[in-house]
Length: 303
Ligand code: NAP
Image 1 (cartoon, rainbow, N blue to C red):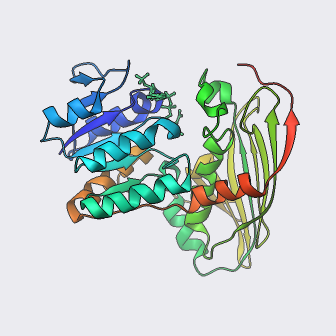
Image 2 (tube, helix red, strand yellow):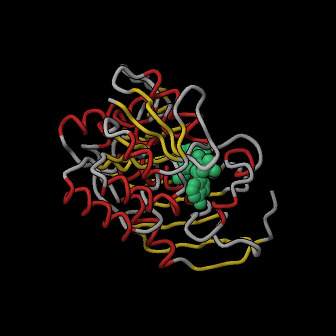
Image 3 (cartoon, protein in one colour):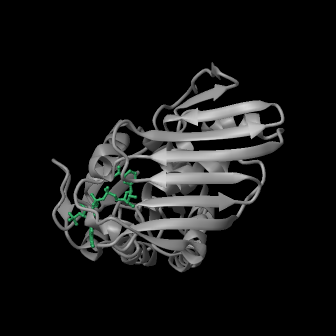
């Protein structure tokens, strides 16, 4: 299937372009970006022009930051195209619900991707936990924004989500593996005095679920989730790439490897089946944190 990539920046070049190139299902037929291009691929700066000149492109993958993404998604769906959304699927829940209504009304597929849900050990963790009683879960998610989002000021602008940009990856794993849903009861958000979005967040959910997100962390990253159950302790390390149960590392997943190849594989199945997959649970927790969170001011942040 022909596909167009919109928003050719860091994640498009790091992950989407290689995943599409390696897939038997997809052909990158065009890009749309104000400046970014992919060598050898027809490049547009205007999405409407791309869509009208290429009726054969039925699928559009949107890799822009969340705030500008909605307008592109709306236009692609209105033009009858199937749409794949980078995470988070929108800057607000209302936007996401609007896109869902539009996709249903236009009979197109819509896929809110959560790449971390496709890390190697997530299905095995979900299976293992499915018949256990969870006693506590803790998320420890620390990375350096300067390394992973160098110079990307949008992260610190309204709608950019700050530390929830990486933190929502952990929440997408949590919502995927927990056998029963939880909801937020308390949050503390630290926002640099010269920015609009938090750089650290402390979250407390029901059922003894807690999370700590830090985006100003120096040194090696921590992307860990530890779950205490009635039958032992499960820990996911490296964002779900490695799983340890009671001190023993578990075997790795078979089949298609890589989070983004799995996302494109899912999208191919959705389009073929005419399906919609709009999982909004991780974004709901972030919205709750912004509604319920206690605000504290942190030291100014500079790149
Ligand atoms: P980015 O490089 O800053 O942005 C992607 C591209 O979007 C930019 O290169 C820009 O291309 C276009 N863009 C930016 N602002 C725009 C605006 N206001 N209007 C129109 N186009 C605009 O960001 P990214 O790191 O790729 O992240 C994009 C999305 O992917 C985010 O939602 C992020 O959470 C997600 N993601 C990122 C990573 C990562 O490691 N960075 C990992 C997983 C998921 P032009 O200037 O050419 O238009």
